[in-house]
Image 1 (cartoon, rainbow, N blue to C red):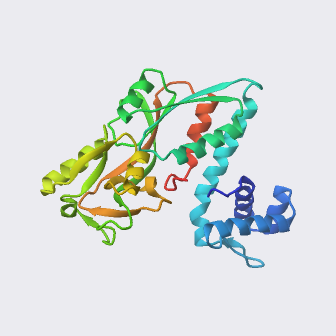
Image 2 (spheres, rainbow, N blue to C red):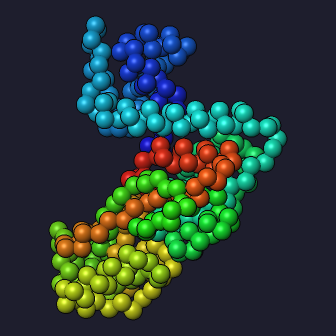
Image 3 (cartoon, rainbow, N blue to C red):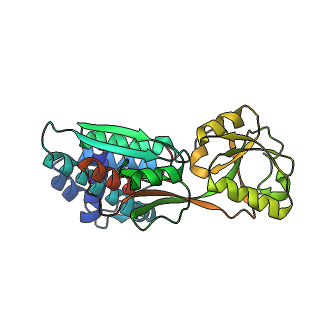
Length: 297
């Protein structure tokens, strides 16, 4: 939903509430043709009608019903961020120290930060990196305000967490790789295959374990620090990688499910329980929880 405008969401919610385009336009203080065009653009983006337009019986389509909760959360999050900006002292600087896992799509986090900047122009940002375990340590130590991690962890009791998204781990390869034409990849197919792995990643350790239990012996000879490096090496034909689905959305690579792997990962937002939020941290939490993390861009 990269091109979706907030006024389109506001118009959609008004029509959903009134079930009348004329009344919705009056409520939004806009001409009805402008409101109708905005709804049509939204429908073009979603690829289907959001409303059945009948003279005396306008109502939501199934697509409209499915999108309503998400669009309502998005609008509420944006409003909350604006309220935070209005209430914050003019000219004041807000700091946000954010830790991001190397297995979390940078574009997804960047889009949330763009929303924070719109709400609070005078905020300073410091982004930290490292393994998920290191990010947790830094957060507990007070060096980071918020962390976005990408592995499943038994989080410490002191950490308050919100699950943003769950997704499968896939085998990622070039389109001309010998396994690329298969519908799915069996563990036995990985025998002798060069696999690019992330260092200090519990998901990588789990994949090694599954292969060992199945008697498959891939070549784990290439190790990288993050998913972007893995994707670059896959493109160069140095091997395949096992990566979260969101990391390869929109790329030119082929992603296949791995039979018997049954591994999911969670993208989780965390902070230390009881720690007071700055306006920037509060805005980031609200916008991150409203975002559709199944889309990396």
